[in-house]
Length: 346
Figure 1 (cartoon, rainbow, N blue to C red):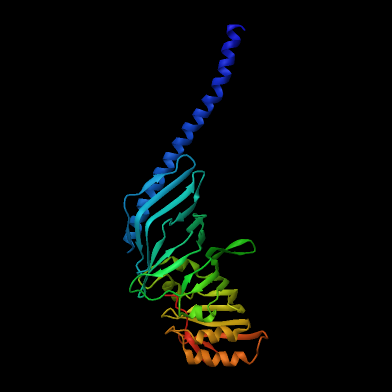
Figure 2: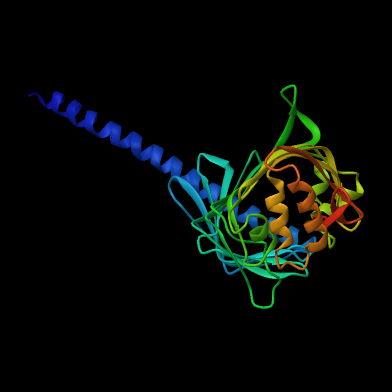
């Protein structure tokens, strides 16, 4: 082999490695720039929240994940909104792909503690507790909350929590589409509960006859932009003042052996946060669920009203029934029977 051909052979081996080295150096530079941007914007966002009345504390943040991810760890995170609702965790971890920094997933690998105003705290643990958010530049980003096999344990001194555990809890939001275009100020929301188990003696355990509760409910939220205002009254307060409503409400409930399809043209909240409006149900074997509710030990349930409603529903036997739940005057009514306080949004 001639000296010239030997030089060409070695050059052919070196060139691919040189290209890879240049690309790796460029990618590393991009990653460190991205990590710096994430850390800087995070600090700005935290200060903005504090200026707005939030309480945000955490130990020093660490950024890692090179080369393909951006991973931000928040040790000892404690976040409390002006309303008093809050979340605390021994560690929160936020991750995004380095090539798609507009899609973030936030994890609580060791569980978290939720603070409920006036009700105390509840510890939440599970196989996976995560929140993902994407399309951050849109008016309403896509949001997903997923709890896989969560358990709920009230902290000492706190009020009971309706659920003890569930197979899965999911919440999804996205902009509402009209003729393929995002509506100006509307957002779609989907809530899904799979195989929830109620606390001992509570209304969920009673309604399911110690069985399981599953629910899937979807709706469109009007005046969705007003949900961004979090003040001392809570996220739904300014939304209610602006005339916000849940429209096109549809779903299905399964409580033990009882089931129902639900629908409503519109639901809204009163000034005190109690739900208002009419909810139509096509129910199968509703008497069993209502009778179980009447037998629960929950102080929120009107046992006499629930017992009367159960007796009236039992007359139909196993035949499907068309019923109407009325949320009015701060109460939940089934015909003339007051069952319990109306659900409270804030």
